[in-house]
Length: 171
Image 1 (cartoon, rainbow, N blue to C red):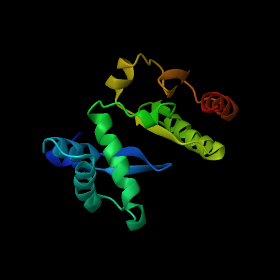
Image 2 (cartoon, rainbow, N blue to C red):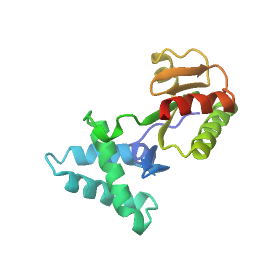
Image 3 (spheres, one colour):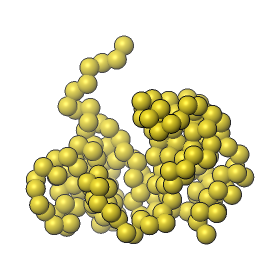
Image 4 (spheres, rainbow, N blue to C red):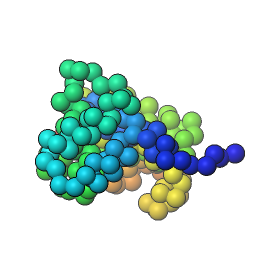
């Protein structure tokens, strides 16, 4: 039985972002972005600090990495607002689509293993919402999109195929 949603659910939502070259899960990012956006016009430094102050109590942020987290939060804020981010041109974005089945998790694990092996920074997103999956034209899961292009649908690709695709885009 599904429980009714509450305002606290948004704060408990985990988003995956890149902090430096590392993918991390951040609790409450979407809610914090909405709160800071409602504050009106702020400088980039003020936005980064406001997000940091809202997210630090909900997440472990190593003190030595605070500035990296602030920059990552600012980048996610700008993305959410639809602003172009020139430093992300050529960046790899991998999207795994599926309901959360064992094959979806196998694909996610494979993606992280290959990215680590190839020393490639990338934004990895897991989409489990069936409405969003079908809206993207995906009819079999798991599916893998690299930079928005469907590379696999209905199966977990081989390690070698994934390496080949990523090497071709990274060069």
